[in-house]
Length: 249
Image (cartoon, rainbow, N blue to C red; front, side, top):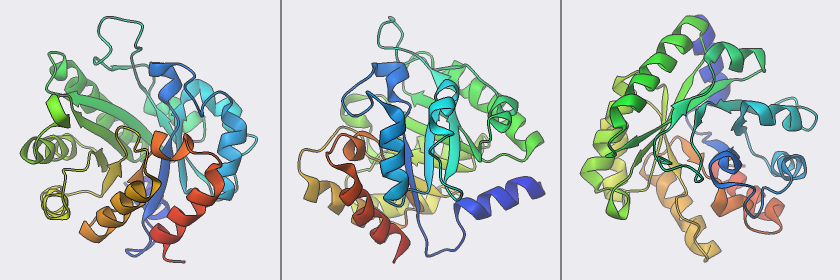
């Protein structure tokens, strides 16, 4: 129990400092998309830009290890599927909390896609990951998505976030429900820190930054945003602007 408390304090050292996390696991499911052709140079630029936590697949840790700063936190994502298969929405566990700890992780990450036929299998996997993390004192992040038209209604997003927390997630990442009022309600009904995800890439950088600001005002504990950040070149200046918003520096 103490281990998880200590690690969560590293992720959220003060109530005022929001977590700046960036998932870089997309190549597993989508291939080497724009921005992820080479992981190490991107990770170095993000670290220099003030990112707190990088989340990667277990095999990608070998590329990150040489460039992680002393204070940069590491998350290992252990849910997998690919767009090459016929069940790309069915994420399966491909690693364990013990493997993540062995790789130096500060956090384990899993994904549940709510609203699809295989939802039950993914909830079982979330329960398994929760048990493993509790035994090892490792915080668990659940990326909780609603795979319905439009990304789910505000009610459905609240349900998914609460379900993830009730099954043992210590942190929940979810989609923005469309307004600060709805997101404030989602944060209030989710008993663990909530991170906002970026979703589909927004062409307008100002619109993206507005999403970050609105989320913080509505109670987000931070962000967990990938493509809306790393697919913009250069990534460093934007990362520093976001770090200022989240860290209050």
